[in-house]
Image 1 (tube, rainbow, N blue to C red):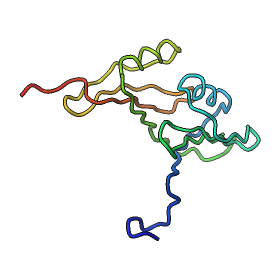
Image 2 (image 1 turned 90 degrees about the vertical axis):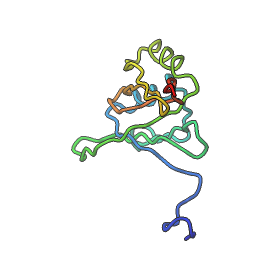
Image 3 (image 1 turned 120 degrees about the vertical axis):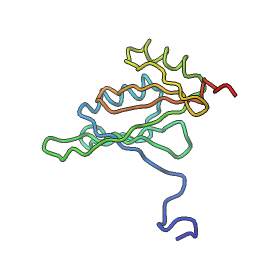
Image 4 (image 1 turned 45 degrees about the vertical axis):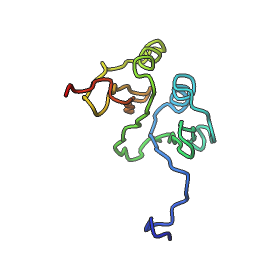
Length: 133
């Protein structure tokens, strides 16, 4: 164990996992729409695929939820982008429904989408609005 972490984490590797009903449809969304690359794909038989996120060592795990398995809550995948407006236009062009952009002055600007399985994704950028001083 290191002095920094009380648990012996494997460094430079982290996963965020979503449960999905349609394995191939979910993979297609993340690869074809968001441009993530497949790192490992066990197919429907294994029910697990890993896609590289745009951060070194970070991956998104897609877990095929089998009939009768317990449904746990999902979190929100948050992706940080340089150009929020261009990203929103791109996603809408791909047929993805996106909320309006919310601006919290001096803090953040963001909008929300769902993947094909109903999992939440939030797209964020530096604040577009600065408060007047």
